Length: 336
Ligand code: RUB
Figure 1 (cartoon, rainbow, N blue to C red):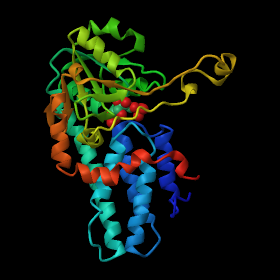
Figure 2 (figure 1 turned 30 degrees about the vertical axis):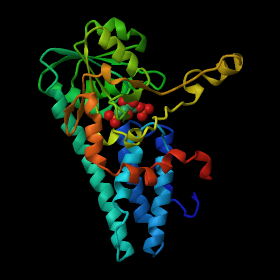
Figure 3 (figure 1 turned 180 degrees about the vertical axis):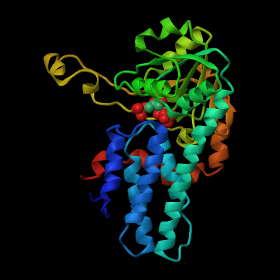
Figure 4 (figure 1 turned 90 degrees about the vertical axis):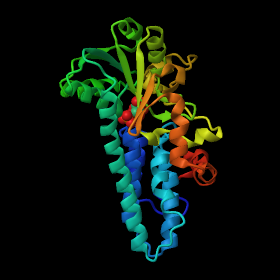
């Protein structure tokens, strides 16, 4: 496939497509594959000029970032690599190529280690005999639950099925394989079971500057039910899911997917006057979150801005100049 100027390697096209169609899903995994795609693109570049290589990498970066709009982990992973490429004076193409490969690997390792660290820190918030609830499939939330389970603390976990894509089933299997006592429940029973729950642990797609969390649709309803029942809610999130764009007032775009994920084609044809909407993420305000468990520590949601300033410092302006571009990239710009 050809971008504006350059041909993209097939493996990179496949990764982007698999992120877009949700074969690769979950914010952390999306980020790791984003970095992996840059690594592959660098390996497969077949020109012989450094400045052309950088131009090519920039084009590939924009292409990858446009795969899923809500998960900021994807542009953040891509920025991690691309930011470190800028302003460097490479003496050869091989040096530039190695640099991309090294930083992409560095990001992937960081991300994997972060999930383990979140597990360790989050497990400290789980007490012996706790009954937990979770929503969707979050690797970071599963890491917390499984670590706490290994410490003998978890009595059982209520796992919401999470319509329409039923990612709760992935969680149910992962937890059950790890030996956790799992009860799979329909989404609509959240209030019914909340009475029995001690703590809720969920993941995040994006953490906003004010500490609000964007996660799989239905998370905010779990949070509402938890608040009402005085049940603590923890969000497990790597720091690269914190959105620097929101510091400068950008809103997180909420991905809206195909109605056929809710009802089938035939039903849609039989009921042409019914409009079917399928937003796949929602926003949980900071007041409904007890703490965000990151690899850097367990923080109150209101401290999200501190993580962002530590990470991006006074570079927000620069970041906007270079990286906001992804918000403007439209699917149609890339001809398949
Ligand atoms: C998955 C989802 C997960 C977060 C965090 O949505 O909302 O809770 O991405 O996951 P989708 P992780 O299935 O639409 O990608 O902790 O694995 O990064």
